[in-house]
Length: 451
Image 1 (cartoon, helix red, strand yellow):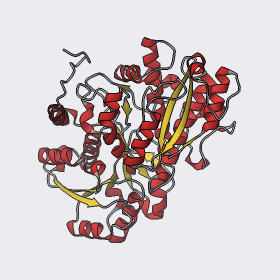
Image 2 (cartoon, one colour):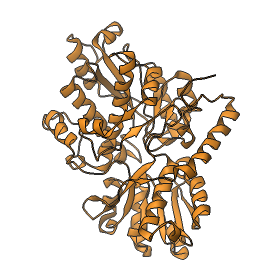
Image 3 (cartoon, rainbow, N blue to C red):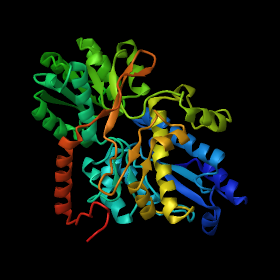
Image 4 (tube, helix red, strand yellow):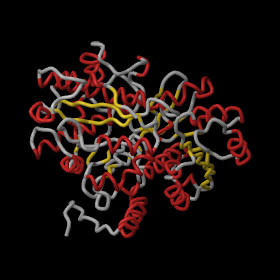
């Protein structure tokens, strides 16, 4: 486990403090005077999922760099950061958390990205006790959508339950309506982990409601060989395959599907099987593959011009591969960074233009309202959805789009598709209530107050 990017910390602090630094640090007393906000990055630049993580960090770091260079940070508070390598693993993730949770050089941690579903679940109670909100874009414990029970966990935009529902609703759209779902065979090929199993409950409910056959097939981590699984799928002859993969599992699934003759345009990947890194290794057979996303590919958003001007063209980008500029995962990093920094901005509106701590970051998230107008100001209309959170709703979105690979690039092939929230919400609340009972938690009121 190590920290890196010390030069970025040093340059950001120097720009504000204007004094010499030793070993990339600032004196504790200087941090508040300098108005720097520390954001730790739990990263995985090595291991089975590195190809996914690397462009995500690039998007995040490039957006931070842009804010510092073009806007002087957030209301005059410069952003500083460093990395702690987790390899996506729980043990290293917990080690990283313990190292960063107290902040750095006088600056507190306002919000933490676990950037791993297993790490997010392992940190759930620790982060609550430490009053550090966990921000998990499109992943994390689904029951923590209920902020009354989980005040410090935020599975924003698209929970796994919503992901499953939007996939089924897309199948319904292209089939001619929800009544056409009846009798269909839908296989879910899933990463055999708590992450992969997270959609089993909603899919069972959706199958019961709409009359399709729900068939679940696990793939052992990391998914390098799926011969047996796709041989079974060939025997079942399903109408659709919902692919809930991660890392190497996705291109292996696409290539193996082609070998057994399953049409790739009837495979719809989940949110973490929707990147260029997922389809390029599959080669020509990936053409036509579909996937769910909340951050479409593309580099023609107004924000991209700002990034080019202040970051890319000045040689300050964290990107190692220029082809990844505008990729799905690079854009997901941008959206992640937008949500986190807008939550800090919201908190500053109440607590002052200074570094924000965890309790204040939690308030900022629960009162976050990223409107279409604000997205236009950022230059991210079409890149990110609007997002409004509350003490009782830590998801705020529940919508996604579908993209399709044409052999060279992703094309958006649907409008925003809403999940069946009215159907799924009671199940989520029941799951959260069971957790509260087990842990002896008294849920907050809907407005965040306690009795």
